[in-house]
Length: 119
Image 1 (cartoon, rainbow, N blue to C red):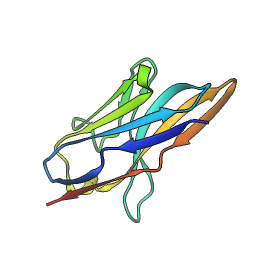
Image 2 (spheres, helix red, strand yellow):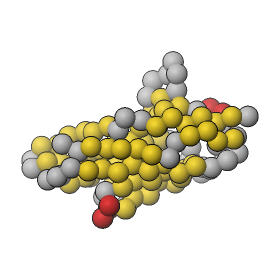
Image 3 (cartoon, helix red, strand yellow):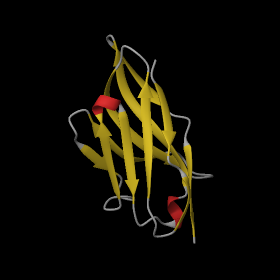
Image 4 (cartoon, rainbow, N blue to C red):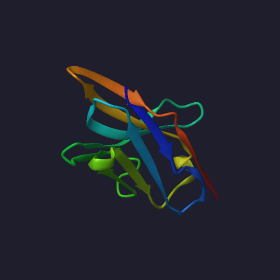
């Protein structure tokens, strides 16, 4: 099983930037896609961005142009750079991975990291 650990959250002023990191650890796995989701209080978890093993990226409209997802395949780490942060970006951000162990496809989630944007 893969363990995902996020870091980099915190308090930031509106208009500021931050970078989230998520490191995957374990053994005998191959990650196909890594991504980021977020969940604000009272809302459902929503998709933010994903990146495939080949480097293809997809973004939600809500962050397009403000977010950049990148991946260090050798380190099994994914990053999310967020710029021009807005109050509505406040949420718990979760790392996600679609991976294989043997012939089994699995989905893993991190524990989440809080991002709070203040005015």
